[in-house]
Length: 151
Image (cartoon, rainbow, N blue to C red):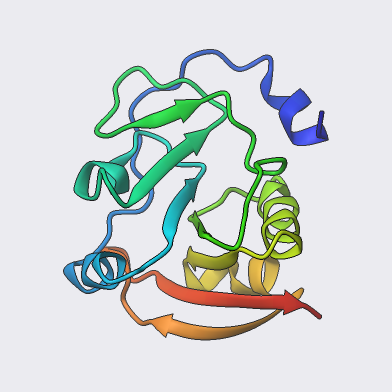
């Protein structure tokens, strides 16, 4: 069990919060992806509500309300990614699970896409070779980046 998993065992049900609200541009990008998208840290499942056949949400924390399908209690840091998956990590907190998840996904052949705010790029993107996929992917100006490998 990862340290992140252990640190979350003592948190109860979380209220409804949406940190990443995708723009139409990002939703168009999702619509043309051939791989199954695993929305890591999916929260209330907003993205899976738009694309129920294309996006699977996973999250450690139970929420009071859901918008789409989210598998609660699934740890993205140990998820069995394959080359048929695209791991989406949108607006992660700074606890470190994003890096563990990226390493897990890349080691298992999955693609990884990070969505975040510019103020977090140094913390979140610095360890990876990355390229910009979508400018203004989120309603708060987030950008989407393809993470290729650990530097």
